[in-house]
Amino acid sequence: MIRAIVTDIEGTTSDIRFVHNVLFPYARERLAGFVTAEQYKEPVSTILNNLREEVAQPEATAAELIEVLFAFMDEDRKSTALKALQGIIWRDGYVNGDFKGHLYPDVLPALEKWKAQGIDLYVYSSGSVAAQKLLFGYSDEGDITHLFSGYFDTLVGAKRDVQSYRNIATQIGLPPASILFLSDIYQELDAAEAAGFRTTQLIRGDDDAASHHHQVNSFSNIKPEQIPS
Ligand SMILES: CSCCC(=O)C(=O)COP(=O)(O)O
Ligand SMILES: [Mg+2]
Image 1 (cartoon, protein in one colour):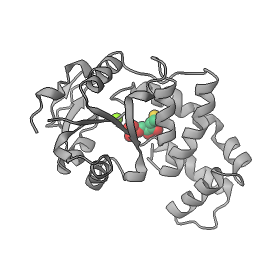
Image 2: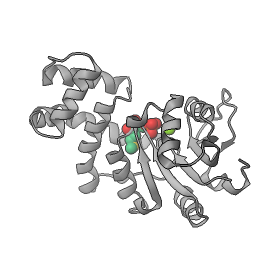
Image 3: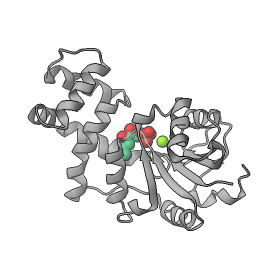
């Protein structure tokens, strides 16, 4: 029996184009100015020290780190430091009403239904937990954060790493076989499956022929009560 559902965001609950065409450019335009102005203040000072550690450049200046961050953005590197900075910058965009967190229309009804069935809902994204709460707190459908029992980001590990899912199961406190992971990326689903999770792949565009996971094109086609554990 499925007792918890963990969902990815980009390409799963939300359009990849919202992340890549709205969120990422918003942070990119502001990142250099923000880091320069905030480099000696918390939390940016600690984030920059974490980044120095991540790139093994303990003496790197803020200007050098900004170059690193631009390279990371170019390659969509899921760096914890970059994700933390993006999350802080996005707050202004949400609060000022520059954009709302995109949700596919099938997402909220399904989340509400599953919650009413007694299934606990969680989020796992490379975006920081703060960024996840913003997206769901300022979503197209209003603040839906009350539906979620917890959030996971790269602090539990990378999304293609099996150990990340073991960590999530431990933190949720349920056997992996009772947890369903939803994602659009089959490599993430492979890792979750290797940890013992049940998996379903969201196909919001073209089919994914390389995947062996159960595929659906809408949250309305996911029936957790029909998944045997
Ligand atoms: C919290 S929304 C922004 C998501 C993000 O920054 C990102 O890199 C998407 O990563 P995901 O693991 O959700 O594919
Ligand atoms: Mg995704």
